[in-house]
Amino acid sequence: MKHFLELSEWSAKELRELLDLAVHLKREWRSGGNRPVLAGKILGMVFQKPSLRTRVSFEVGMKHLGGDAIMLGPSEIGLGKRESIGDVARVLSGYVQGIMARVFDHQHVVELAQYASVPVINGLSDDRHPCQAMADMLTIYEHFGRLEGLKFAFIGDGNNVAQSSLLACAQFGLDYAIASPEGYELPSHFLDKAAPLIQKSGINIQTLRDPIEAVQNADVIYTDTWVSMGQEEEVKTREAKFAPYQVNAQLLTHAKPHVVVLHCLPAHRGQEIADEVADGKHSLIFPQAENRLHAQKAILVKLMG
Image (cartoon, rainbow, N blue to C red; front, side):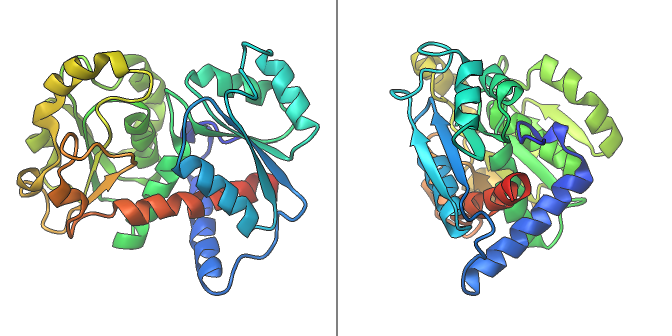
């Protein structure tokens, strides 16, 4: 049985097939609706964090495919607190045909997968955001008609989104540059773990301090919030450190003229991204948000179909 916890656990060929399936399911939905390939199946959705895109896209995706989804918030399940994670996984496996979890500690989703007898999907953890990365690759592919050989520049914190972006670039053949302030780089333990995959891919990787250098020749510029959930006490420190890393019209002039801008949302406008960019002609952030639905449908069909 296969789970979807992080992109490095799937082969490049498998991920390419997932992307092709997402394209097919999106086309099918727009031309009259998806076939009910998940009829009679239920996805249990475990949330430790608030959610807009993750919750709605998974629930709507299951309904489009003929199935259903159940939302389980922190008040219903205290993972590892009210009940052990292993017990939660085994109980849910008796009721549902798949589990999606949006958690803080990545180990929680790993442990759910260890004890569950149904597929487990990582809807987000502090270390990884693989569903978002697949939606991102779908968005870039739709826009450019290819992925290989493009340059992807991430501006900001070396967080879960930055890490999953690098894994996605390695799997799909995009060169990758990241610019982060001191102390907020991609973690060295992550780079060590990803090294074999990066080496095998042959892509160019740059870890930089200067955002202008990072976006040179970029086809895609990506940013994310400076302060993630659980980091609220660091707001003032982070805002000061990240101020030079705003994605604004001036920064875009250093990239390719056709550059597109992505953001996984929610956006803190006026901080990591300026309104002129978020709402401007280079922005794909809303098609990108919609593509969470279509990319995740492919994951659901592959794991639960």
